[in-house]
Image (cartoon, rainbow, N blue to C red):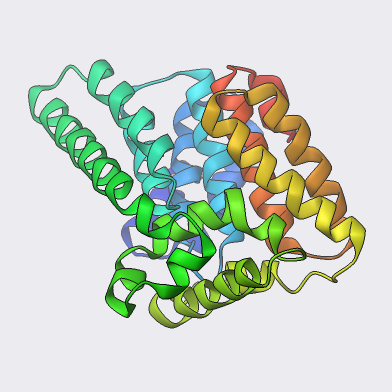
Length: 267
């Protein structure tokens, strides 16, 4: 099964690989390499219109880390965080991958990725002032909005989405950002999130999600997981998979940073 899974990866057929690796893991559930390769298959099968595969990719790569944290697993999970537009988490993983790698060529590659990640975050901080509030985002030029879409999405998740009931500017900014992400990246996650019914409990879900993202950023991972679980439960009741997916990603990330493998596997 492992060889068939690898064959599927090499032939650019990740869906077939996923099924083969799942069957292989049933026979060898403690095999970290199988978990890592399954995570890679999920990552290759993920895109803006199929975001749920990112959850599978993250889950199995972190399982591999918990069983045996290797330079390869750290490198692959850093790439995944980067692909998922989670630059702070990516920077942490590149730092770990650089420290763990012993082969000079791969250590150099990981260090270059780390430097690029750090430079990206420095440039991002310089754009924060222009995009830090809904009003400043709305009055920014089109090119500035386009260049800052990833940053604006991060800020919107942490600071704007839970304000759309009280602030017309926040609502307009989030809706406009959702339009740009769909137009420029074929990413409809934000627009799907906003399809939640405008009821008090839905507002609570968005508040808990924003709180979880803020707490994870501050390093308060236990409280972040609690807030994200609360958000996930409400999103599930409202049949909003976009919100539930992001809440689960916050849970998985918080558990991974707390080195809590058992909870991470069942989240």
